[in-house]
Length: 370
Image (cartoon, rainbow, N blue to C red; front, side, top):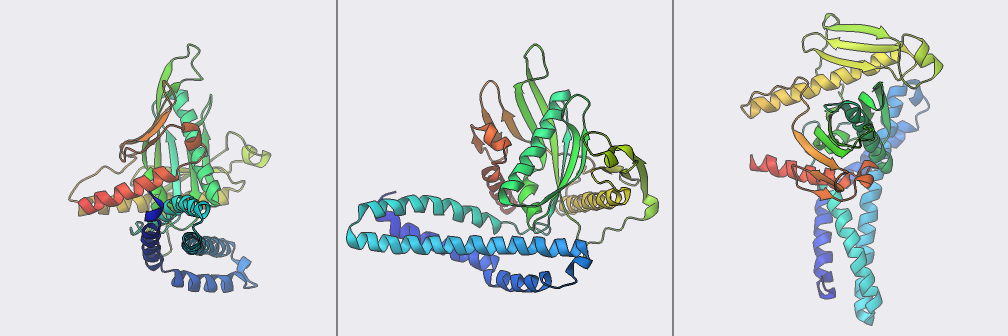
């Protein structure tokens, strides 16, 4: 892009940003922020800890959204003013500076635009993420642990709070399964494109002969159940088992029967939670995960019904959607969007935004095509 194109590029970015501001309704976000700030300052807020955490989580998220929009608007206005001054004074150095800022602004505004594509019924919810080792033995268990760290690092990069509900460790290394929550609005809409089967190809560190190994792990993303949802679970439909936690943990965790396993008899769905010291806390967390699984099952069944299709939603991890190749070359590729990068280390360290953005755009295009 030449400097002569900068004014038109700035106008186009301004139009896109105004559309984002309208869709996200920044004025409403500011009003919601004022209400939440008033709630957060109430002296009796922490009498109900669950409500207090919900209020503070929403307040932090909305404050972050408003701040991001205000910073983008400020950067765009500053770039426009700098270009006008630079052109008036024939300052080539400042014009080049505007060009660099335009590159950064274009990417930042495109990322913000993705938020406007999250319009599904449950997209605004928090998310429960479940990871399960698939075929591949100990390599698959190790891969499942790598995926869990990847998503937790992604959340950490964004400042999103998380809560681990369950980690079931494999005998030799890695995880058989893990369940955790990402407690921020729109986590479900954002992460739901990560659901499916993930594949890892590498030289196995567990193979004495140094052979290449292909292993699989499944990722399932579910929306957190809200009070308005009708997910009734009669007591006689749930079997509750308690047992002693295993794996890393404190004395209280490993020496008492605090772990809880819930089995939903009609569907066969099994949920475990063992990361809290209290059996009561583990039971409450497990029930939240079970409700989330049933809500996602209900959503999939309704979606299938609307499409006139019959789908098996019980224990299905979906189709293979991403490959992580560490040997004989370095590449991570999404098989749906064709987006790929040559730096798996960065991806495993939480650099997922470009994959998630591509997935959201792909999903929206697929929905429009249907």
